[in-house]
Amino acid sequence: MTTAAPNEASAPIIERDVLIVGAGLSGVAAAYRVHEACPGLTYSLLERRERVGGTWDLFRYPGIRSDSDIFTFSLPFSPWHGNQTIAEGADIRQYIADSADTFGISDHIVFGTKVNSANWDSTTDLWTVEAVTDGAPVTYSARFVFLCTGYYDYDGGYSPDFPGIENFGGTVVHPQRWPEDLDYADKKVVIIGSGATAVTLVPAMSPDAASVTMLQRSPTYIMSIPKVDPLTVVAQKLLPQKLSHAVNRWRNAAILVGTYQFCQRAPKLSRRIIRTVTKKQLPAGYEIDVHFKPKYNPWDQRLCVVPNGDLFKAIRSGKAEVVTDHIDHITENGVALTSGRELDADILITATGLSVQSFGGITIHKDGQPLKPNDVFVYKGHMLEGLPNIAWTIGYTNASWTLKADLTARAVARLLAYMTENGYTHAYPDRGDKEIEEQPVLNLQSGYIQRSLDQLPKSGVAKPWVVRQNYFLDYLDFLRDSLTESMSFGTVAAQPKKIDTATDTAEARQLSDVG
Image 1 (spheres, rainbow, N blue to C red):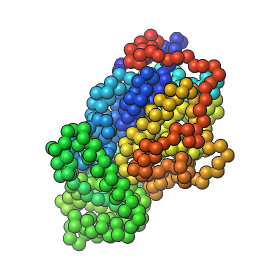
Image 2: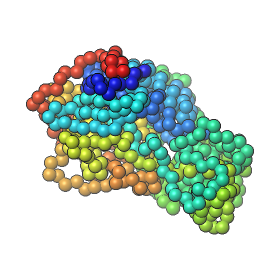
Image 3: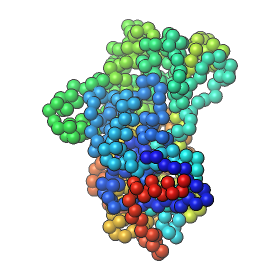
Image 4: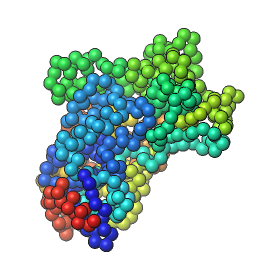
């Protein structure tokens, strides 16, 4: 939706019942579920970019694709039309846009809007949200804030300070800021990293580049999966679209959860299985235990998947190489390794991970006092201890993000419906005097997680304060959930003004009036 720049001198406070921050998969799920459960509530989605899609609009590097199967990664209420297991990034972004259009969500999105802060006022039971739209300040008032901002910094990824990188004579690129005009044809490319981004870039770039080298400090578990699953195709042929989507979604979710549990409970056997499958896809005599034998157990870090073994095909072709070594320094012509070897490069790609960030970088205040994320526990995986009328979406690390995002959206929508029905103006998780044993909110050993644990809220070890990585247990808890468990509800003495304007036309009018 097009918005005019607000006028600082006369800009009114824009009122909404629910304010959703972020218009990616999580934001679209949140909007759909809130409207489904509470059609009388007004809502808006504030999106800092100029298009929907979130991650799938930000990342533009070659081969960008989902690292989970698309049927669990897509939305349960908006069937995925293709049959490929792993979907291309551009197709995912278009799917998000189409879903937002189909369900009327696009009319509620304000693009080009960066949210800077949110303050809860206990005297009115309202959030005041300060944002900037197209460079001009805008203030929102909301009864409930729903943060669908992901957990990493959109402004920049993590790049270690490699010694001598300032002397490199070629081009240095981070995948999060991929130049549209980067020409890598017939160039020597070195990709530093071994995660999902690196294993995607290698097969995508190797057909055109002179050579592609994936330089890793230590190996990652990589599994090949079918690009098109025959059972998926059968379900799509025999069943109506919505039913086949549900069948494929539940089946794949069971595979994800089952695989994770098997790897965690039988690490030695799972290591042997992965090694056997990997060995069959590499050239004879390949040093598999050097380049594809991690020091950790499967799923202690996220396991990477490659459709139809495309990474291994690139290695077999001779156009791609995996090097396991440490960087001593960067030279003018490439990378000098501690082993004494030097890798020639025209282009260095630092696929070295994300910078984790809570709440999209938004500063949260309660009655003017700032909240430090690491000071509070997460309640049922989506609300924050002692903080009223706010929710935060964080997906699974061992399965598709959207499985958890949609559960969160449904739980928040149920809470809003309960509050509306009972006339409550605030609700917040309250542990009272209960002591909670602490553990990290994200349980992976991945470097980007370990670097940033102090930037994230905390998890407990028992319900309702534990953040679990098990979709089926979370789903069962959702079905039998008690909304009042460890929750405080109330009504402010001074009732906030009723907000009952139509969101699509009123928002456009309000923003236009201040232009």
